[in-house]
Length: 403
Image (cartoon, rainbow, N blue to C red; front, side, top):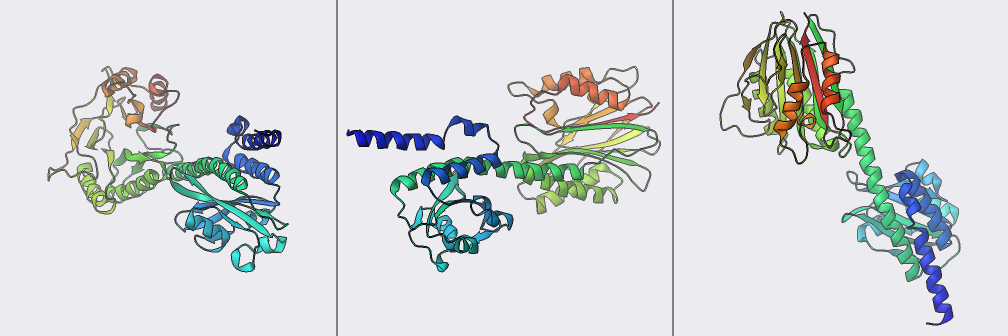
């Protein structure tokens, strides 16, 4: 190999390494996109660099990060797939190079106002899906080489990872906001009852469909719910919100928790096809002496009465919401709930561990529950069972009949 070829190969490798070095791995998604654009602008000696990410619902590309065309990001430039230069790259999923840019080639007026003469764009793909488009522009007319295309595609691959991370975080934040907006900001003050609750999002999946709810009914009864929609992320949180609202509505017209869950199941199977949820719906009498419970596929609560060891009460578990029960009616169980008694509802994230049968976790939960103030019970259970890094949401609701 000639000396010039060796030098050229070495330079090319250094250029590739500059956009794939380990230092970029420590940046968050926004900073990574920004740093990638800065580096690619220097490496390719171009004047502009822009990343547009895909809005799947609108089928449009949205300007997300830019160097030299920051106004496009500030004004939220949107480009439909198939329209303009970036839209052409997205539609074909192939690199596109223009040595001479004309007004008919682009959507962004900023490209023309800035005087961009030549453009090179490549698709950003992650997991086989189109994530967006990366394009660079030069004020001076130029012919982009195959090496330029390869380098830009490497940058696009890194941007695809960052775009996925960013989208996941946006979904996670939206889901958390939705989930928290649907939870009571503080539990209601209920005469004769002491309440406490926890919801800890799983770190691996972020937000999910776990929830708890407590509400007074016009009859003087108290409704208490803990539930878990299958799946994770924003979709599960949205389904959870709809189920929660529907159950509140059915609670106003049903004096029997089993009847309310029957109506809710009908709603889920009709309007939430392919979704599944487990729910415990509990109604506590106005005198607080009894609790009526119905379980739709949900884990049995733990009940601790004064001077008695905690235990799982004998409550039949009916099919989850969204699952055909074959015509079998849902059942209601009446529990004695004397003064000082504590009832703990929870989702499976509290007791389920990988590589361990769920009975082990439930046994630990029973051992941790003692009749006492609800906040104290909640904290004790949390300390005894909650892992440092939960891989599923953990929801818990504690109700105590005050002595």
